[in-house]
Image 1: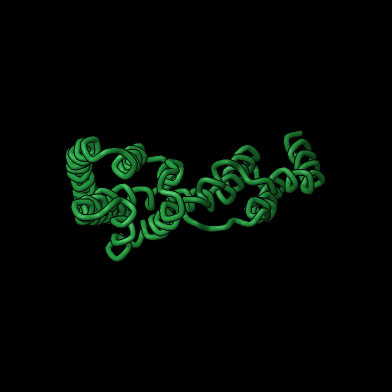
Image 2: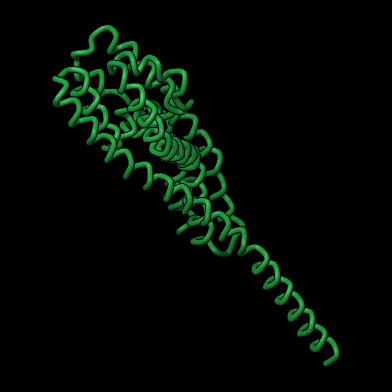
Length: 249
């Protein structure tokens, strides 16, 4: 009975393929954000291509015709389909997270360079001069900001939209301070400048600590490899001894 129901569901699923592909052809909000972070253009049929792999994997369920454990085959088929469908998304998401971490680490360093330039220049001029020193991961965003504020330095949206896709509150606050520094009096600007120095120092210290902790974690895992190897050798030796005892017996 389970075999008949499973094959019936498979047949209905095949008939609904076109409708499923139509639903998947629409981009989700998550994909749009990943596109902005990675600066890539995912085609409208990207989800459809992911589904194509699922269409191949679902035929694994046919093994129920020759297997005694029907439930296991169904479980493995569902798991395999979910895995091959979600894997490309998780890879993209991992790349996006790595870039966000890189931006979070490099931005306070870049902001320090801007603060030095601000001592003798306006914000607009400082941003322009900073293009020679900006880290690669920030270059496109800072370049776009430079072009926008050259056209209209009074528009706060140019500052707020810079690196907005990363959703990092620290960057948003820094951009607001740069806007105030550019468009309000020197007395207020000096106060904002001191606030930027204090905030950037804390942020930079935290970013370095997180970077150091990540490096330590990598070395910790590497340090576990010899222990795992010794454990494997010990277990193999014990298994050999046990097998030899049984053979003698």
